Amino acid sequence: MPFALQLRLGKRVPLKVVAWGHTNGSTLTVANSVTRTEDLSGRRIAVPSWWSVHSVLTQRILRGVGLTPVLGRPASSGTVELVVMPPADMVPALASGAISGFTVADPFSAVAEAKGAGHVHRFLGDVWH
Image (cartoon, rainbow, N blue to C red; front, side, top):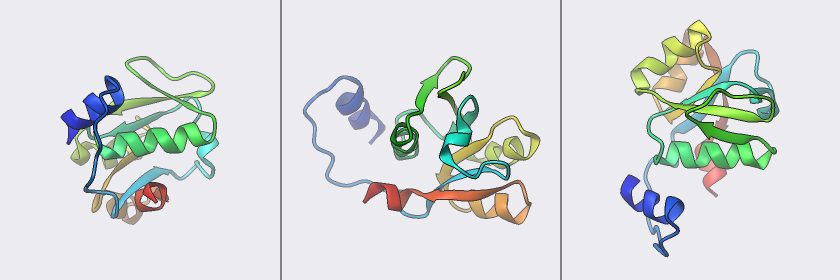
């Protein structure tokens, strides 16, 4: 799927995606200080890979409130830096303040909530519809 996405979204190849996994059970989990998506302006969010459904839907969420996702450079006002990170590193990074959120499948959002490191902000299944 990542290669198909790269062709479709990155190279504008007229490819049709007919099935996609991880659209339910995945979340945008954010720091406790974040109450609105707009609060992510100037901050950093982790995704498991650039061409994952998690990244694509996170970008959709951000663009929906007027924020611009960026990769490979620090965020500034009006932008959100997306960093690629292994899911197992996301909860500790959120707890330490290294990131302000992450998008990935469970159980990581549940672990973040159980540890008090953050809370679920959006379910990706809601964005996908």
